[in-house]
Image 1 (cartoon, helix red, strand yellow):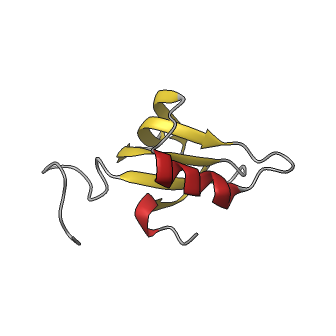
Image 2 (cartoon, helix red, strand yellow; image 1 turned 135 degrees about the horizontal axis):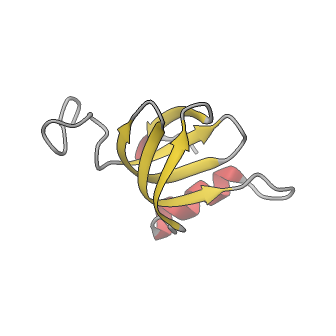
Length: 93
């Protein structure tokens, strides 16, 4: 539902599982906490590393189907690395 804030006093995406595209080619999937001057704070984060033969869309499909395979409890994606953020369920695969 548009405009609904999971926790009052936080950004609209707070607590929502998102996909964050990094400018360095990595993709992050985790629960959005906040954006600060330091970067974007995510919880329970899985990271896709672009390596030869790996398919980002297949990786995202697995995250959707089986749940986020978190490798980081909390991660701050530096502001200079952080790109677009979208809700995982809204990503076109």
